[in-house]
Image (tube, rainbow, N blue to C red; front, side, top):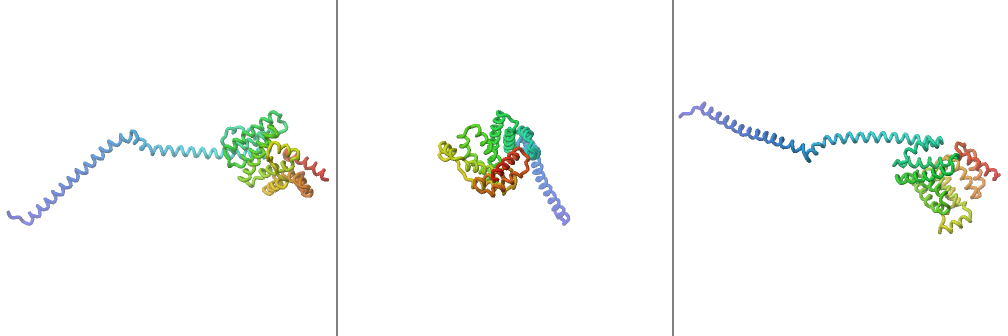
Length: 313
């Protein structure tokens, strides 16, 4: 059989096309097989993913979304609380500055079970201030004094890094000592000084803490000899101090916040009197006398300063 060029070319093309289609067909089976495998796997996977541990994994995007919403709500609540907290503290400080003791006490009493040291030490201060009002009877005064100490103690437990908690713990502990006898009061003196020093370390710019520690030093510096002997009998080494040490704290308080407190001016005058420095005593006692009397304590300071100036001539 004689093959023409055209015939040969046609057969080659036919074989090529046939082989190509066969290869494609074979490949197509593979593709269809892959599809079947995909759908079969999917049919097997969907029930598996929607049950048991896999369901939890599928739930992650939803839970994450819900978690974000919850987190956002918590964050929003935290912001609202923070704003309310700031406003309440500002309101409390405003009432304190206006000497609205009863209103301040009632405001803060709502937060007596708070875990916030800032509310608690302010409540301790308000309770103490209320106990000092002239219209408070003896039993109520004692109750408020011990309440103040408990609030101060709780404040310190909640935040040991709060300088005001240390300060008011020291003050309230001293007040409680008035009801517990001389031995307890002197014993507490060590603790009082320790907490005042901590308050000053945490906030060296707090004039009140400096003043109170100065007062502590002054009280022991002017302790009469017979009381020192009694203290020495009770304690092997009773607390001691000097007028010079007291003066240092009073002056530091004045340096930090000039004219912040009428009693600091008075105590500077009295300390210089104890040191026999009449000229400087006159200077500070005159300042105490001329201090604007806004509070009951200011009026008492004014009267004492006037009396001391009269004695000095």
